[in-house]
Amino acid sequence: MIKYIIRDLLSVMQYLPFGLLIGIPLGILLLCFTKKDTDRRKRILPMVVFGFCLAVIFTITFLSRESGSRKGLDLELFSTWGINARNNAYVIENVLLFIPYGFVCCWAFKQVRGFWCCTFIGALTSLTVECLQLITQRGYFQIDDILTNTLGSVIGWLVFRMFFTRRG
Image (cartoon, rainbow, N blue to C red):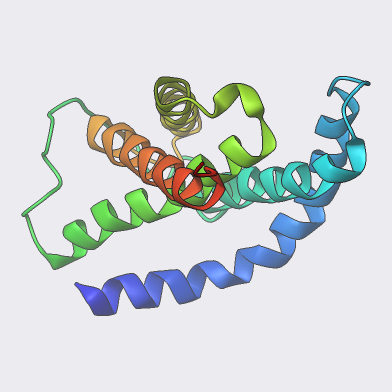
């Protein structure tokens, strides 16, 4: 299973330049919609990293696959875990994909720093990805993916809390 994860993570590295190419302008665009009274210089890096994170998620979940290559709906909970090492690797990779997203959401948007808000945003983003994959037939709509992506967002929130919560 580890060999699958390492191989898949290395193959994803090819999408990082595209993530930067799209993420930087997206982050700057998002920054334009923030409150005018905030210090924009402090907010530019988190917004650019958020844009990069969204671009990488989009690239991995859509552009790495041909349209019409995958069709299907799987509403059975925990149907992907335990089948084989390849499927188990996919489950872990879904968690790993959203850990940075949960972290960066909290870093870029103060409104998302609460546990439930970050969890909701992670679930909503994952649901959006799954629905778009179903519509474009670039991926299977799987409840397990929504669950594991949301878990990744929660882990990202926990990492953010560990690094950015000041103790008295």
